[in-house]
Length: 252
Image (cartoon, rainbow, N blue to C red):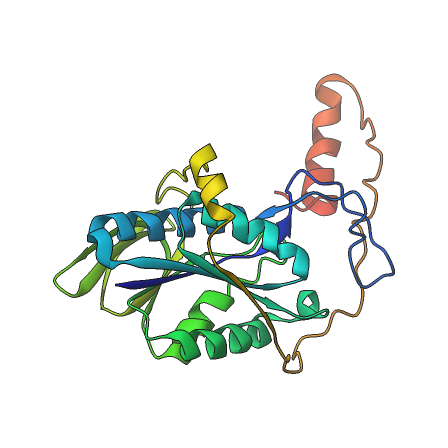
């Protein structure tokens, strides 16, 4: 069984983000980590490998700067067998469709794959589109935002949560999945895994990028929050408070 998992290097969610030139983030002093949703994808890929026994392998792949080797080494330390870094200086500016095109072309060259895993989204741009788009290009079904997965008899059965309910879906293998919080509990890399990761293959490939169809025209921090105000005191303030919530804040 060949298992592929896509990951991404993103700023830590606790990082203080500054805008550099109106178009990009200033990376100075920012901690970068493995995308949190991708951790669920990696864990699920490793569990499927362990369930299959010695006949399964897990390959991790990312598109990013050369520094993304750090995140790939993390995935190798968790238990993946090999990693591929697709790199280009402008990789951070690609939209979801162009990113999916590059990833799918490289995945197809190295396939076929039995199982393909993604995080449901990357926390830096929140596009949600890369996983389904890559799956479509690879010609396989995609079950998105799953929180439970069973694989048996050549098919996948997954559950995902929707507004006020849950859906159970089935699809034949090979199949792709985008993974949501609740699917599993990602493991930590052990010291043995960290040492072993240094000897595992990590291939670096310079890629050409297609033109992006979505252009960032401006990146700016949110405007400062306006100061609060006191609308009155006691019961006499209630009508004015209700009016302000309805007409100004528009929350009623």
